[in-house]
Image (tube, rainbow, N blue to C red; front, side, top):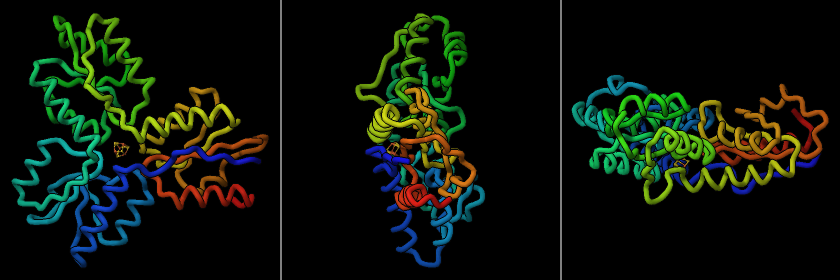
Length: 287
Ligand code: SF4
């Protein structure tokens, strides 16, 4: 079996930056707990490594003792979370990715113009929850065509709609929702620069090109990693079967019989050493 690896793949600048911030904070305060609000990144291996070094992960700031040091993840947080941290006297370490922070600023700008806002993304994702919090009365998350219809119902007289997106969705998803907004009689107003980040676009382009040369694709990434799920979808959209594997250990349960060219890629929060382990096991035939 021939193995090809997508380029680029794996960890993006935003995740690398968040990890560096977390590691420097832990190293600078030995013996002290670093409270991480939600998973720092959506990768269970990264989370486990940080936990071993003194990080603790919470989904509610009430679990952080007053005066504690709290780290906001690359996915960003809603303004209400920042206010709560301040009210509780917490020391905030902010690892929000600059690409996510840009979407927050755009939400505020569209809201200031009085536009209804369609946020193309996945409901409940940490990044989406954070952006939604900037203007909850004006933003609707549009994940499906039904969500577009609901937005139209909420603003029956609107002519324009601001369109934002989660940084890790596919361009196909944004194009589909924009088309549906137009069909509903709303003129989309887009930000000056697209919201899907460069790392996401490059990794999706790479897996699309790789899919054309392979008869199966494996995406290494956690099941709650939006960008990893999208990589598998993009490969399937290009006509090649694709599987998301959370760990090299998952190989044991995969049937790769009949595959002659296998493509590998990894999500933006997947450590490179895991991909290399996966590759070595495939090349050696070890499962
Ligand atoms: Fe930032 Fe993009 Fe990486 Fe998300 S995927 S952390 S937006 S660079």
